[in-house]
Length: 142
Image (tube, one colour):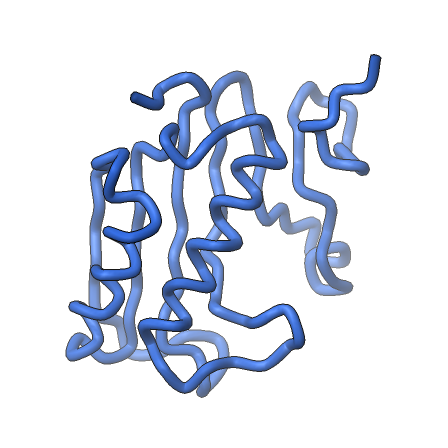
C-alpha cells in the first residue's frame, strides 16, 4: 500500500521526507522548501506568490498565501495545521504587523503556536512584503 503523505521525490535516501523542488533554483541550490525528520516538520521561509505567479500588493493577502502553502506542505509530509508549534514572520514594513498577525490567527491560531514577528529591511524581491516559516511536530495537535 502506497503512503500518500510522502512527496513524489523524497530526495536523498537519508530517511528524511522532502517536498519536491518547485523550481530550478531549489534544485540547483539543493534547497528544501519543507522537510520532515522523524516527527518534526520544518518549513522554510515562504513568500506569498499566488498559484498563477502573481504577487498581491497587499501584505495581508501575501501572509494568507504563505500560510496556505505552509499548511499544504505540512499536510504533504503527514502533519496537520494543529501540529504547528512555531511560526516566524518577517515583514518589510512594521505597519503591516496587524494584517499579518490576522492571517496568522486565521490560519493557525487554533493551535496557539509560539510566534515571532519582526520588521526587516528587505526581502529577495521588491514586491515581497512578508516571509513566513514554520515548524510542526506530527501528533502535537490538540
